[in-house]
Amino acid sequence: MPELPEVETVRRQLHAALAGKTIVVLDVFRTGREFPVGADFSLGVVGKHIVAVERRAKLLIWRFVDGSAMVGHLKMTGKFLLVAEEYQPGKHDRMRFVTDGPQFIWSDVRQFGYVKLMDADGLAVLLAGYGPEPLLATPEELAERLLTPKTRKIKAALLDQTCIAGIGNIYADEACFRAGIRPTRRLGTLSAKDRLRLAMEVQAVLTESLAQNGTSSNDYVDTLGERGGFLGFLRVYGRENEPCRTCAAPIKKFVLAGRGTHYCAECQK
DNA sequence: ATATGCACCTGTGTGC
DNA sequence: TGCACACAGGTGCATA
Image (cartoon, rainbow, N blue to C red):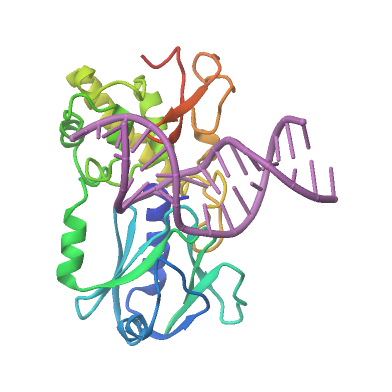
């Protein structure tokens, strides 16, 4: 599901609901391969006072007052849902966090996502591995990240979280379209102007999507179960064989970097 | 180095 | 209706 706009939407809601609250009970409904949750996790979470809920790349970070943190990744189908006390756990719900304020559920159909505890040092190391935040960096800073390695395909670079953080398959395709650049182009073939344009379109599409609470093409919902509103604004993603909104040529789809990749052969060179 | 393929899972849509 | 298969917003690892 989630790329930067979706994760940031979730973060804002979680922060508004949970900052200043204390986790008082953890109910574990189901564990799995990614997190064999045991006494250690429960001990690390229960009693913790939440200072803030932050986001870095596609990670959600519950900062605790003692410097430790809970880190969550939604991967494809993870959800954090703010729920009422009488909420009945569903088939894919894995944990319930009860606080002195709201309760929230960790749910994940495909079970790729995770939550884990980290100490301050471990978290710092983890976060340092990511590239710049696209909505905090300047376009010039982002453009510089798209300079090397010269033989790399542009879409592979955009998807690389150590290059720029937070972009995923939808917004990589959308940014390339908006910049008029084919996703197969090598970084070395881009002019300085191309790179700057691409950086600006990355920022623009993420900002516009965030304003709509993200894209729900399938599973994604926010913490209240609401879908994002950006789907109807997508120009290429999920529009194979549909007419380009600019030139009416059919949108093409192929596999690049293992991901379905959408583009307009007329508008993107 | 990069690129590719697959693996982790479940659900849904499509075509036969 | 049933079945087989492709595919899905993300990463991580093992091979080319």
